[in-house]
Amino acid sequence: MRTLAAGLESGWDRVWSDLTSRQALPDPAVVLGAGAVALALVLWPGTWPRVRLLVTVVHEAGHALVALGVGRRLQGIRLHSDTSGVTVSRGRPSGPGMVAMLAAGYLAPALVGLGAALLLADGRALLLLWSLSVLLLLVLLWIRNGFGLLVVVVVLAGTVAVTWYADARAQSALALLLAWLLLLAAPRPLLELLVAGRAGRRGSDPDQLARLTRVPSVLWTLVLLAANVSGLVVGVSTLAPDLLSG
Image 1: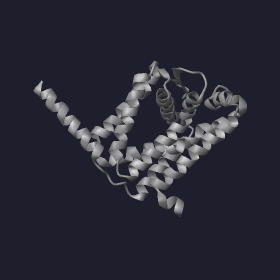
Image 2 (image 1 turned 90 degrees about the vertical axis):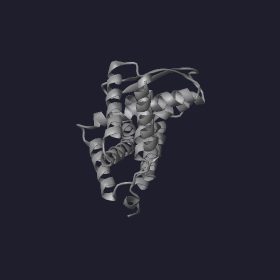
Image 3 (image 1 turned 45 degrees about the vertical axis):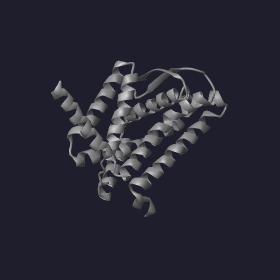
Image 4 (image 1 turned 180 degrees about the vertical axis):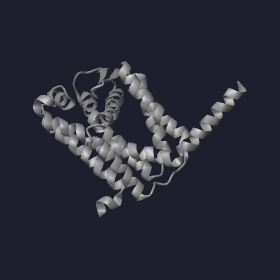
């Protein structure tokens, strides 16, 4: 028992040190290099489905957290192999809470990416990685299908492994890559909805928002896209200020 208690205390001391320590943001060339890699992963058809699956995890987490925040009863999250997902909650079928819950999905990746950029600029790479691990752990508790469970376990295990075992350079590289991926990938699903047209938006979050608010789904899509692009601009100016000022 004493050995277990000592191990737990040592582990908590390590986590607390990670949460409160600062790590300098890498050289601008490294930051831009991570951004270039992330952009390639977002744009290349071969890697986009995997990136989109990561975005879907954050998307559904956004639905879930806001659903709880507005007093809805969260029933579970499902992730599918076609990179789609669904969050099921119970409560009023209309009203501001329902609107906020539906809008949160497409806003979540950009908001998390922007938060990640701000943490990195403040030298908090490890705090970022532990925060993302906690978010993934919460999502894991809500997952209700096998594929979704596999996806979240793999991403969570990889994030925790790098956070716990890797050196500072690898930790910073992962934190940077995740921040860039979320910022750069967030607008793409909305652009795909616009390209797909009205039929492609049927059943989507903007389509449900349109039914609730009587605001056309295309307008909802454009508003959410503008918010994501704004998050991207602020995120880029945070991580690579010289890129926009130049």
